[in-house]
Length: 521
Image (cartoon, rainbow, N blue to C red; front, side, top):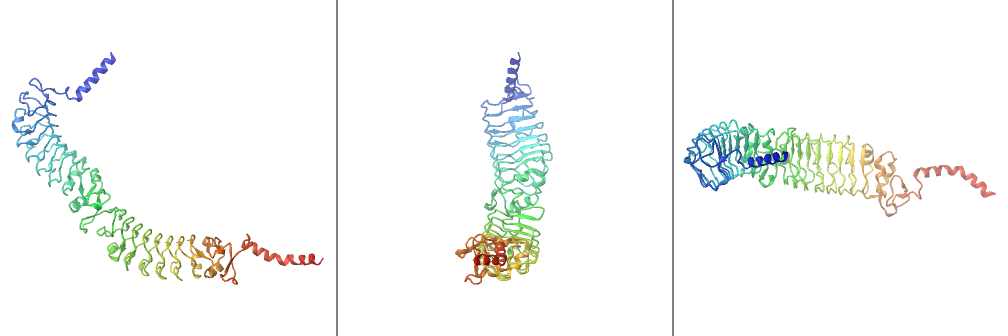
């Protein structure tokens, strides 16, 4: 018995899903709900009871609708016309259906709607026109639909929306505009969209250009629909989210840059294929990230409007030229990050005016030489990364102005020697890295060797690359001063350390008398 009940229940569910339990057959005998779907009808049947409240005409072959089709069914509340071939709806077709609350017209061939199509439908709550071929809408087509709650316009060919088109829809809670051909939205539509609980605008070919500028400027990130707009153009913004990845830039010809700026006055412009520094970003930004782009040259005009910058990131570009005065106006700059570029040298006045700079990173370039005064004036610098370049020598006095330096990286260069005056400077810096250089332990390194005491970590990082007899020797522990040798330095013999040598020298006077007595016996 239980199995029988279950089968009956399943049958009822199937019948309900097919629409045959809630609506009666399409004939003069149906009471209030008439189901006339899947009947190959080419027109609206006129033999139904005049008092019906629901008429389902889905999946037929109707092509046109006119006023006479529904004039005798003035009590209709629900009208389903989905999946027909409707391409024309004449003026006044629905005028007499003042009780209508649901009108469903998806999957038809509509390309436009008459301006007065919904006139008189003040009680309409659900309007479904999705999956047609609508390309334009009259500005006042939805006028008077004050009770409308749900409007589906998705999956059409709409390329634009008239100004004020949704202004009368005060009770709208769901609006679907997704999967159209919309490229922009009028600015006046933003307050309307923000008042609707459920808005869908995704999957449109949005053009993030000047036509979208006013709309972008109204964005706050509070509404879900804002994050659904992904740029399909122009090419430099393709795939970017208008809310988070694109910055309004009224001064730019295209009105947008591909940078995203946050409320903390920082702009991220990394990985945007930029060939120059974007102009028109907020002038008061304190952080600008331009990493991983294609910038080749920098000049003063690039940063002249961003005088509040404190952090500037330019890593992984193609920068080979930094012109005179490029950073001159950035007096608040504390971090300048320039690694992984193509710099071969630095201008003598490159850092002029950057008295507040604390971190300077120019590693992983191709720098082979440095002007003697390049770091003059950087009195607050505490971190300097020069590693992984092609430096073969350092000018005398190059680090003398850097009184607050705590970290200096010179490793992985082509340094062969160090000027003697640099030793006191290096010994005053907490963290110094000089390893992985081809140090030549010859007379040019004599003074450095003579100053070594073993008190500083950097001393043990110098491993000789030459001459051949000292290759692989540690300058601090395995090489001694030898003025008589042409190269001024020689290897400490055997495995004796410097301390062992001192001990041997001290003990010779003690054992010598004993050796003499043994010999004389």
